[in-house]
Length: 217
Image (cartoon, rainbow, N blue to C red; front, side, top):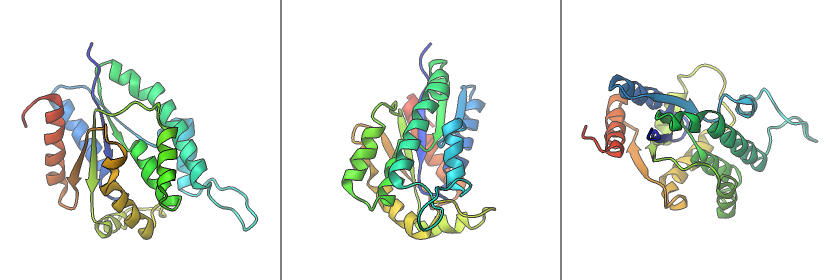
């Protein structure tokens, strides 16, 4: 059996990664092609811990009160979750010929931890090195969206903002994603304008997915 394709959808919070992952998987299934959606942080044990940190349910004691873990600790947790996620869920599905669509991957770790770490290039390289054993995607789709548009979308969500859902951080993340190709020169990365409606974004993504498969839209 031929391995399935590994597709990653990336972008800042509110760019539509989760929505588009679900839609594209549905389209593949409608064509009779096996597809599986997943996400990072994963639903595995380390991923669950990370999600509790992101929502403020897990904090660390400190001299000045409780606080979330620092960027280096978060980068290490994300890398550990990623390798477990690959071994337990992603690679077995790919080996079975299933196309796996992942909502975020190590690009998010590099972007979010670099911005959290002050934007230093050495931080980017260190996080990239942490993930050097992570399988490379066959296609990465970066949803580029204006931070103000994304903020407006996040405002419709229920619940409190998560750890990185701060407007100033999201602005810096958008700038980082715009040049993410420079850090992953060997990866197949395509940028998608995600400022428009859901249907238009889906059409652009679908065109790239079909190109990956060697099919016309």
